[in-house]
Length: 245
Image (cartoon, rainbow, N blue to C red; front, side, top):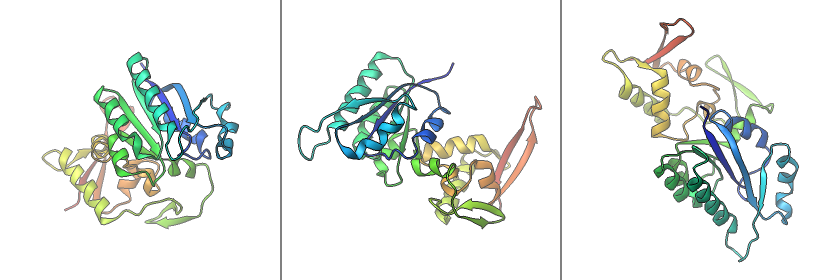
């Protein structure tokens, strides 16, 4: 049975440019049965959102700014999230914002046993990122549908814009995670490695480094050895990886 998701969008802190790609990404994790966006729709800066709301069946929630300097949108979104939580109609939440004010909300939802996916810009503060089960940078969602300058890295063409470098720190992180889930011979099922990487660092995503999947990313790095094994049912091959000594 597919999980029902509540998608709550902070219109004040998220650009509208990649809403189509964002909704396609969310659909990978469940059925977005509730889709709401919060903001003061009398303000001109939210006008770009109005053009895409109907196309994506997102319900706009009007929230006036009652006090100068206070973000009423945050409060309305948090109250709605708790109402949805207690209604027991969804199995997970997708919080779309780059605002650290939603850190406590994400933590509270996870304490109730619900899966929390965060989506925001790369400027999102670390506390909100780690409070989610998974955090996706909105910049990498748009890169798949827009032509960008590319460069060749180890024989592979990768996008230069918004692509992070695979630093020694990243290599060490991946290597230690492989060791954590490896068998006595050092081999680890790549699916287990990916899951553990996500648990340790919710914003870890191969797309941040220019790769659509984890397998080609790991295969492109000489520090790791990759092996393809036959599955018992023969439908697809299993990918295993280990650190090179």
